[in-house]
Image (cartoon, rainbow, N blue to C red; front, side, top):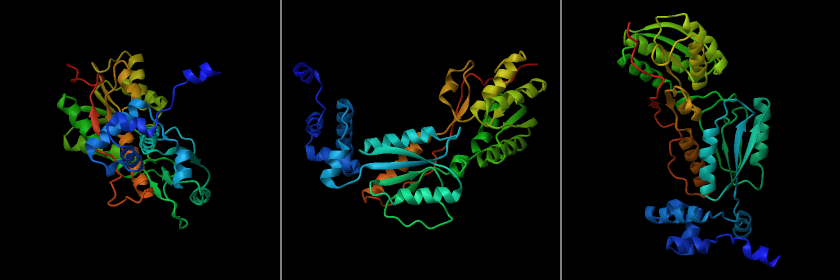
Length: 339
């Protein structure tokens, strides 16, 4: 037993962090409460020391001493294939960096049922704040002292709205492909009920018209690889098509599979562009060109907004909108085929 105790690594303390960073333990404490209260270089030193020592604050002990709450809740809709996992990852990282524990709660049922669940959460005595990926209910007023921030712009079925649904990049894709000589396009659209799908289709069609190009066809997909595969079989029969713009990576993958089965090479015969920049997209053969959306940064900004409200340091709101989307060019795109 003695040997076991001796061999067990001692958990780093706030004093260990202070010594490694070359600051006082009071400075480390200030960082954990609000890192923005420190100078940038001091904050950076403390942050590096925390990471190097893998320091994890004892939230329960701190809560007992200061009577502060260190539990934040992230509210998400019921299980969905389109759950914003990257936003959640960014939000959780920002919460942990600020010394908070994160619990995820799924809201289910009707809008009224979800409003009741949210009111119940807000009435809790052990919650420091709530970050919601679900719209704030409009059916009933909610009066609570618990800080609440609505992250992203989704409806109750996880359909993106606002900056998340901006379709401008679809026009940029068409312009890029046109610069490579492509003139005959095909669009695999997402479900019409989704604002993001509608906006991408509109931006695609506007760019086609403005540049004097031809859209050979539009297929209505459902975001799945299967719907992309079905569209790809149609595209394979349209020999004039040299460029495909898909509304998401999953459908683009289905398109590429169908083209492959019909002996049509990507990008030699047909260029394919997706959207979402899934982690898997860069490992495909050929790797898939896509649209990158920095959802992690949006989740982190939303959580920092919540933390500032919890700590009473909130002033001017940081814009909780998505940063401009970026085109990521990979192997699935190339010059128009000759002949």
